[in-house]
Every structure is written in structure tokens, then in C-alpha cells.
Length: 131
Image (cartoon, helix red, strand yellow):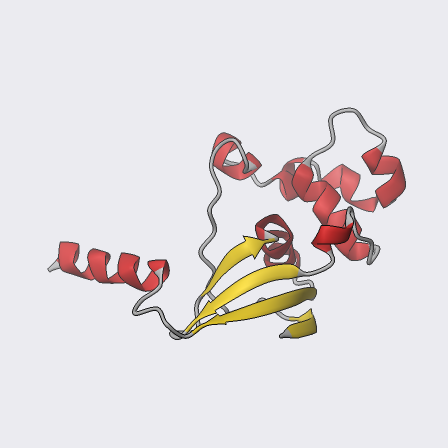
């Protein structure tokens, strides 16, 4: 199902970032804060920089309603029975949209066969560890 102008606020997502893919995990500071002076540059001008940041580029493309390549027209989300989401594609754009209160275009795939998603499994593990 395709939803244009999806509001990611209030939903839970299972991000799969690592220090190699997330500036904040690597440095402790979100790229949107670290490079905030670049947030007003045009998408085209920013992409000509040699050392651009992926999250700033994602923000500028969302702000300008531009796609960086045809495959990023829709963030691909897998919705579990519990209501939580995981990603097929678009976790950086979704993270940016969450932090900057933006709407995104998504393609949602329902996963009705799963018992529990990774978010629910992690919550159950945390509860057991506390007890």
C-alpha cells in the first residue's frame, strides 16, 4: 500500500544503523545538528560537494521534494501485526523525517505472519532482565 505524506511521528521503527552508517552513532552528535549550516543550501549545490553527508542530503531531498535516485521515491516499510515497522529501504530518510517533523512517501508491506517483531522481542527481553 502506498501512502503519500505519511507522518512517521508516533510510530515505532526498528532502525538498523551502525557506526559506519550513522553519523550520530559514530560521533554522538546527529549530522543534522553538526552540519546545520548546510540545511539551507539547495539540494543540487549540496550534492556537488565532495564530502557530503548522507542525512543532510536526505533532508535536502525531502525538503525539495526531490528523489536522489528512482528507488528512493518511497520508503519501503514492513508493518508487523503489533504495529511496529522495520525497513526494506529508507531508514535514513525516515530518521530525518522524524527528527525534522517532515512527511514522507511510503510503501507499506503488511507482515501478518509474524509472532513478534524485533522491537517487541527486545521489550520482552528487557522486562525479563529487570525482573
